[in-house]
Image 1 (spheres, helix red, strand yellow):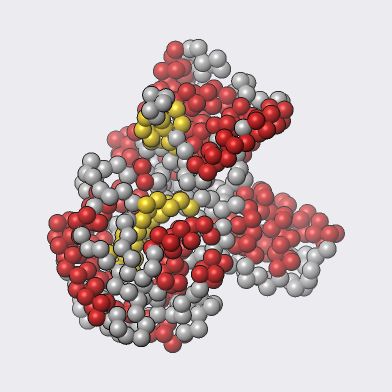
Image 2 (image 1 turned 180 degrees about the horizontal axis):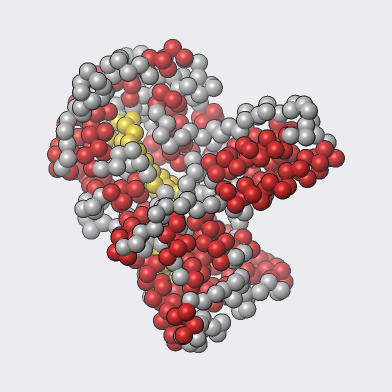
Length: 530
């Protein structure tokens, strides 16, 4: 049976493991890189395997051509100075893998630090310094770091000294046969997690200010995050990083990813035609889809005697009928919310929400968010993802769909140019919206699905469709304030023309899908797919 393989690299991938890909032609070099007793050298800061071409890099990541070209162009030729770079997007969109493989293509030295494994300031500081100082923690050294560092001020001083010495060494190697340049790149992955363990709220401002504090033109900073840049608020000024957005994969992108390295492409293609469209409405994460597709493909192949057979139309129908009872089962398992102990302390829950950014504590949403807040969260998500010009065709005053086709034809015909401009803006990330648009969308969708109100909402006569009840409006504004405090929605600044505050939804689509399912709300019918 063919195994589902993705060209993407795990978030915790090391330089050594990247050199062990099927295309690698240097197994001896790879074994050297993984030898724990060998002293580290400057060469260990660069991928020791064979370099890959730009075409190979692009082909390894379907749907990421534009992002790869933008990253390569931004880093520029060898030894080109750069301002900080901010790579962001949802989970499992290829951000980390693309950046790591880009350095395999460029063959330039870099330092990688994941905020998943570096879960405290001292661990973060010492991990970076160990790599720059070419220090390996092992038994002979008592598993100690090269430098003990706990204070941010000490980190900046030690980092500046270590980088200066490293850059001098790189410049000394420039005259050799295969120079890798004198630039050193610091890569900080999963930056949004810093807010969970940084009690003083000082580490993120420090990292963003490294460009100004170090004043070393040969140092490049790359931040990778699931949260957008405007969610990282700081009272200190810093050079704003250049943002590169990784959108969710399209269905065509997912087909290319899952079709790679298949022993029987035609058989697996027929399997994808049976399941991909159904799972695509639930999640676009490659890791979740891969987990569901692997056992489903085994079930799909059970009626076959030969796994290399090419199914015809009748056989495909037979295989699908055999598979169909299991699809809904794995759909539920794919989107099951992980069970974790509920936080009983209200203040503790509030602090977790504020620190999590893009809402990693998903189970808290389902257990501690009121029904009206869930609808408001969905409304904000739709307002950030959908072009405003399509509101009239996607929604009506009753939340129904009877007149949608007629309205949509007229709308698409009359506002093509305006929609194209808004689509270009949306491709850069979630858009902002005024309060009036949020309230209009909320009014339309609140009557869709099974909208059961809380007891206290019933006392206020509920959320009426006409929006005339002042208690309902005050309740909505209160819920909006709570969602902003919890970092589910952020304020995106004021528009000079409108003179009002604009908002932005920063939750990922998979979270909103789970919230919508808890309300039995048909989110896919109202979400515009590009």
